[in-house]
Amino acid sequence: MRPLNLLAFLLFLGGAVWALTRSERTVRDIQATYYSWLTPFLNAGSTLEVKARTFLVEVEHSKKLEAELESIRAEYDRLRQVERHSLEVEAENARLRRALDFQKRIEFKATVARVIRRQTTTWWQTVEIDRGWESQVAVHQPVVADGGLVGKVDRVGDKLSSVILLTDEACQVSVQVEGTPEVGILSGQRGQYEGGPKLHLRFLSPKARISPGTRVFTTGRGGLFPANLLVGTVESVLPGPLDSEALVRPSVDFTDLSTVFLLPLP
Image (cartoon, rainbow, N blue to C red; front, side, top):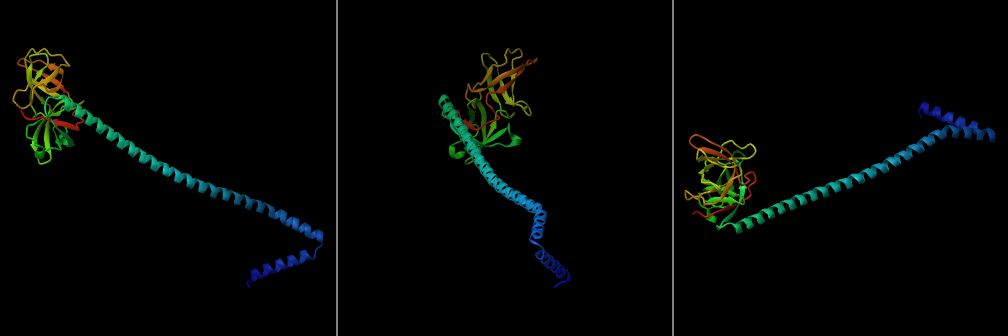
């Protein structure tokens, strides 16, 4: 046994012998003193135990709340996905209803096509549709939408075709201003897209009397586009010494093309 341990044992033994040889009253006083000295430590230990148990209960409760919160988040995300899908389905159904209604209203037997690809660099020039040789699509076939003329087919593949849009300067159309004898050539404008694309109407008479808001339709001249297809409305007119020009807002929303119709060639 180590010296320190032996010394402690002897002191404890001596204290015990001394206490046992005292009178009963003295022993009770010693016990009272001992317990009075020990009581604060016992109370502190009891308080710490209560706090520890409370802390463990709170930790367990927090874990349950965290699990419930995670479950609620997962359910919320699932409901958001369901809502998003429902909105997409509803929007698609609305587009199909408009397409069917438009197909009933037009005089031509049209082929429905969906816009499946659109490049950012050529957003206002071309789109690709899900129809090709297999659907008997032909080059230069007119393309329309619910609002009016969209453009024409310029390349055809087996199952896909490319459409040059009316907003491209390379797409030129013979048009007439409604309620006037004014006839001109309409085309897109390169780089004029702030606030939406505008169309350029040229070769009007020098003293053309055209009011803003007047509609513009195809003439049918040239044998490419049928007559009386709406292309847009006049925004402004710029008179000139030899001819006048006008700025036309397209009737079709070219920022959001989803469903189009291919008209048969004349």
